[in-house]
Amino acid sequence: MDERALEKLGWGPPFVDAWRARASVGEQPARITADYGVEYMLGTAGGELRATLPGKLRMAIRKGDSARPVVGDWVSFEPRSQEGTTVIQAVLPRRTQLARKAAGRTTEEQVVAANVDGVFLVSALTKDLNPRRLERYLTVAWDSGAQPIIVLTKADLSVNSTAERERIVQFAQDVPVHTVSAVTGEGLEVLAPYLGPGKTVALIGSSGVGKSTLINRLLGSARQEVREVSEDDKGRHTTTHRELFVLASGGLVIDTPGMRELGVLESEEGLRDAFVDIQELAAHCRFSDCQHEREPGCAVQQDVREGRLAPGRLEAFHKLFQETARPEYDTPLQTRGRQGSKRKGR
Image 1 (tube, rainbow, N blue to C red):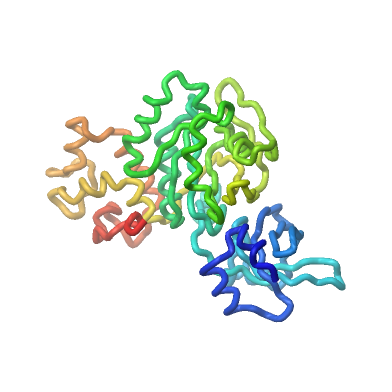
Image 2: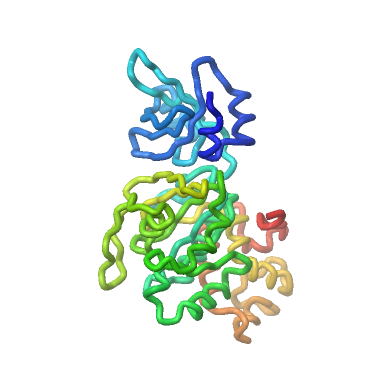
């Protein structure tokens, strides 16, 4: 087995250890590079192969005994030469996973991508720019275990991209915020550190923000279809499936379909990290179970009244808290023991 080909796809610890612990005769490791629903594309030591799931694995997924394979996963597969098919036998343990609540009223988790090092939260410097939506993306990204990076596209269409960036920086805390233009190439060099050899980055954002155009620019070729955006900034879904691309730099990017709805899971740490400013203020509230609404001695509300905290940001926190609240909790997230966040050690 030529591990050098796999290393170009991000192969390394801890996946090597997991593979060696599982290794079964006749099976080989591979990374899922495309998810077509019924079929998958695998990146293997010998090139690309189409693969399916056997009945046994599909049953295990339905029972909740196995994760459903997604783009970015490392899997164990078996080539069945007699049948002319390739079959995925198991999903190796994930290092990180980017997940959202499935669309609708269900609380079911939908994993978008696996084993990513960073998440580009993509929004356009147009009427689409929505701080509240980016706060939602930040919550999901922090909960994934990967590093969130905010990428503001279409800088060439912005009258004042610097001012727009500063508006986002105000609530992004220590999350990097970059402005770029995939059309002119402006700012793209700042993305290079996140796209080094073996590093995997997933892109998430609503339709029409320029994810496919950005990927084409990074690839240096028109691999992804690009569609025009309507006058009201409503984009159409260009990407219809999830796919992993290898860049000339050695980095890997995962494109995802535009998300009309990004439901937040029961994500205590993700919400805390996305609203670390409110968490820190809450430590100064008079009551440990303060709801940050009308209680006396609320440090959060005091900052709102005195103009240091935007009312919209607190409203966004309350809304996302209601989405992520679990029955066993009846107090705001930041008061639950006030543990450390996922940012530590990054």
